[in-house]
Length: 282
Image (cartoon, rainbow, N blue to C red; front, side, top):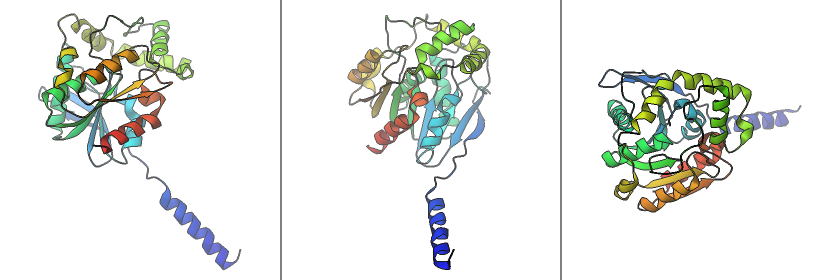
């Protein structure tokens, strides 16, 4: 190889390396709430703060791929709500109000004065309550297949599975693409759900005592809002997304076809694109 060609090859390699995206290092951290509850969270990136809140029976891990994709533009933070993941499991009623208070305390302890807030399922319900309670602190609201509206159409599966058959039925309702449901996933997810069973049961029990449903309060949301929904969601059907959009002034909606209740898992690229486009547009 002559010197000129060698120089060309070296320059090409350097150019390719300079174009590679930097590796995203997701950190595992913890803080202590005022009641001494230790809350674990995942964090990566720098820039405007984006907080991701998981749903019932889940954890911060549901957001890992989202964190990696968004951390190049934002400081992304995903907590394990008390009772879940690596967070403490204090003696509490684990009601919606309890979780909402824990979320605002989490933001306060971290010293976050401004943040975009995204929530999936129960996490969306909590995100709305936070936006209503602290509109001066929440810059954007992103509701992902959110719970919180009154509905007569209840899930036809148990939300607190104790057997492999119940777990598989739940995953079948969660995923639009059934190819995601493997024996390994069933076993792994069931093991985790058994470990948080008491938390889930307490939350479900709290629904019988006047939970803070959102229907009458949607009109009071003053934060720019994006509603992201999986087109094949069997737990919170698409019609609920329409009610959120109609009820929240100026809300926008994006439907991710082929995805179910957790579009950030089934379609991470499309989900990240939707979030970036929305936050940058304001």
